[in-house]
Length: 326
Image (cartoon, rainbow, N blue to C red; front, side):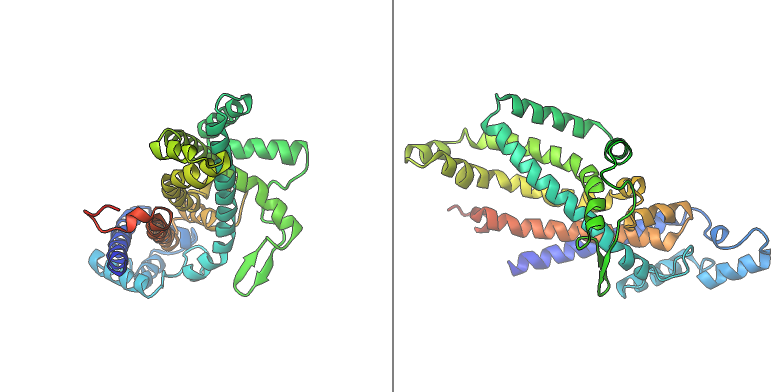
């Protein structure tokens, strides 16, 4: 296990290095950040001085070495737009994004697994057909349209839920949370459902397909022949073996939820990292854009490592060395 973890850490470091190189190269062509910093009355000499202060006149190799060294030390530079350290800005926005991603993932997992199991066990019922129809709608409609429809129904028409913002928050050290206030919890509902709906439908259809496949295997027949109850066969044996591929998809989808929360945060004006990234793109704020890309890459490689470890917990056969069988 130690050798496995060491290999994965080395692979993660290599991935982050490649992503850092791509981010550095990509955002060199995003535009001239000096145009976003200065006003229209700034002289040519002042513009040149700002470029020199930012190190934009240095050779590309020198800029990349300086950039990589700062990233290793956790320094992402100063935002051109906000004039604040990028790490501070991300730390302020991270709680909002992580809470939204957590709620969306819990919604997708709980509802998706329950609906998938029901559709597999009662696939001929009208409710299973309704669930599958809902899943098709969730996959087909774009996220921004789902968000707008939910806002129109629950905020404009019914007036039950807020249409934007995070509500009241409570500060716990450097972390701000909306879980401890009524308005914060209400503000989480619509963006969480919007962000988690696509993942929920994907998990539901995956659980249904995998469970139908598992229910046809020989060991399920043997379990029934041993006299085990239907509940034990379905939950203890069938569902447990169904969850192995679900863990993979759920892990990757958690990274996707964080990475692609940009649209949801923009629609609901959710003050998270995704909205900060959109503002950075609009203002050619290169330090924020590159830091966000590296942070998303770090989240993905960390989740992949955790998923690989969970494999061995769910399926003990994966603990055996290669070439051996139980």
